[in-house]
Image (cartoon, rainbow, N blue to C red; front, side, top):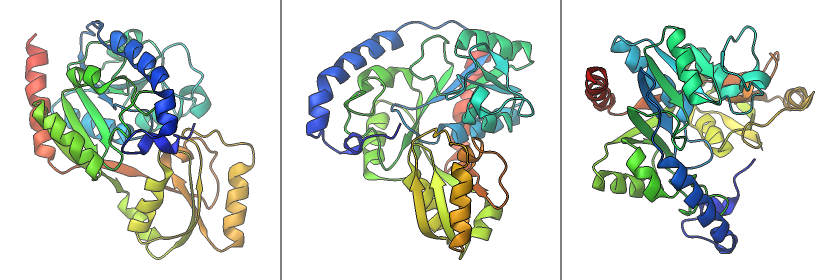
Length: 330
């Protein structure tokens, strides 16, 4: 699915206003669901979610937070529902056996960093993580899911788009009304900068919640190869235009760009055709690491890994340490 343009408008447009009653109903149901109490997992649970549908950088943020947990002596595992995968029973992801059709692209990226559990049922998945030896869980998504009680919840927000027009699905990008979501969030992570994100940061601070500025940093080795390169870029992520701008920031000339829906399932031969077209024009074909997880290994295709970088990493460490002390003393 590609997010409609009217979602990101600062004020609701005519299509948004026409869909507002449906959005209000959706939001009311989501708010009631979020208000439920979750089960205790018996191990530390950190949630990395977002207020809206669409990509904001949750997966790289989850990886960065897991690394900080390891620094604190924990052995975390990732827990995700495996969006885009067909797995319905909980499983421990094995990249040698599972592909994106089984577990989804995000789970494959997470599994490169730490043990990863895919489970639509978060409670069962948490139990499996504990059995696998984890003493902490980092949930990639799940902010609106009340099944598990969270010890610490981060909302990752795109600094440029914020919460769009401020309406709930399908009138806008919100998964639930902000008023219902703020009480479930402990800290805000602003991925990139922008006026919309700055306004949300003001609201977070007014509610007494810390705000951490972050960015998605491209892999320096691949970034160096891109400097001066003429590329054909394609991406099936929440906001492909961000990927294209990142390439330009690396010094690449993006001659052609192909924007595809989030979690796009590539048809047989689709990527090969893009590569053939790139070669015919003398361009370097490049995509995101997330897209590459949904593709077979293709000779000549370049993928750009990115990592979340906090400006105030010491502040994040301090917040984690404070919550760890509370959680482990209960």
